[in-house]
Length: 257
Image (cartoon, rainbow, N blue to C red; front, top):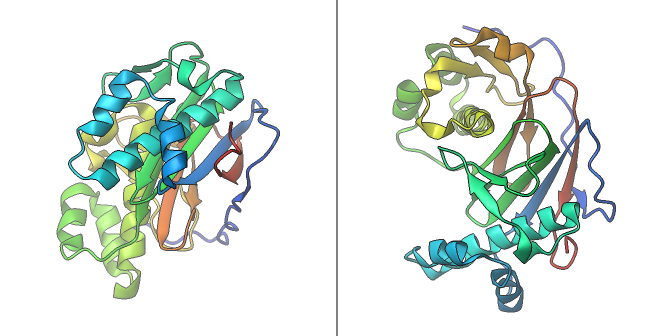
């Protein structure tokens, strides 16, 4: 079993109001959080920025709330990326990797990733680096132990179950979001074996990629960050860089145009 880190926990990353300066430094990754539950006028405005295939994807959701949230999430992504590129949001064209990871056809150097849980979305923007982000609402899971034993490594499962029961849910979602962020960054997605690499999970300790059994060098090439974008939520950022500065902002209607 891995021992606890001796270094103190990192201070929480602060989410500031939306920045006016959208310049992305070479050593930076910008994180945005946004509410997917917008008023009707804002939903309609954002929906107008979507491509026909995005509108079709939104329409496939059974529940109207899910349709609205998908459309808002994609519209906000377009607004944010358009601001960095100084292009209209509705002019952006996306392409998709073999596992569905999106990229910009017209600006392949601008790397991004997005995630959402319930009514909250996260967006990560950087340059020329693989990046992934994930977020989850911390919630009770009746089969938490079974899921951990099925998907986590034996070391991760042992660490999780050794914690006081009150910490199980937070530790579980720490582990899950860090694994998800890493696999989204590499483009493998959740179909890759989750037990072939290990991440930190103990609440209060720094996020980290601890091992990759298929490619041990990955541990020296990646950084992870623990995120708290909203009360009751936990998230993770994974980026292929050992020296990176993270800036976090809250998106508001009309602020990322």
